[in-house]
Image (tube, rainbow, N blue to C red; front, top):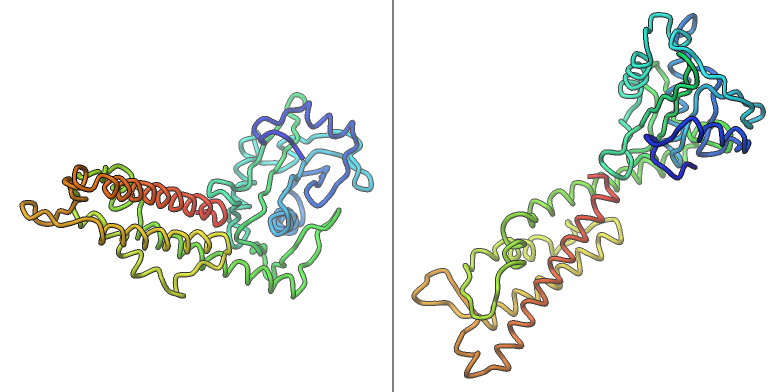
Length: 320
């Protein structure tokens, strides 16, 4: 809805929404009041949390408190005071702490968006002296389905066009299966990063080392050898199709690279544990020397690129 981050939203943006009469939808809801005081405190907190859960279980979106609406269409900005939320509150910070606490403690599992740092965000906007509207931005959660746990029998909700709806059995089944797939791939990606880390071992070595006759420690390639040995099986296949394509591509590249190393580098007697593309080839077999070195550097570059793409895409899709 907004073309800016929640931190950049101003009163002018809220006024524009009301003026344009933008209706409630699957990603937008208006609430006139925000109150946890008086009778039915637990019910008020439960209703508040069900609204948050419904958005997180669907597409994510915004809830704006302090807007009067009619049939889902905003009429005017009314705002509220901190005492309207709870008579014991002294300032807007008390309100924010309360909302953050309820969201953190009253929903299971906790809500996270596609990026690890993406959580529910709350923005108060003062409309006049000591009167506010509050915007809550809820991400589409990678850990859905969620439910409230503030009272017994918390229900799994989703967002309809203009109201919250109980999720059906089939929707819950699908959501739980998807969540299971995500957890499986998430654990597998962590294993992958441990096997082939970006900052130490084989990956930074092949990125920097010049293979044009310069000796290298054979042990520098042990991470690649381990990856080829341990990750070429069904137990380490990603369920996500895009991640699995990258895993297979990386296996092919590593296999080809190590085969090239095995066939075109030789141990150096005076340097135990070291090998190199023979330097004498540069004079005696210049074409072979150039072809081997060029191929090793090309494969190394493709391995680095594929490795980084897998991690980058995995972090984005899986929220690591």
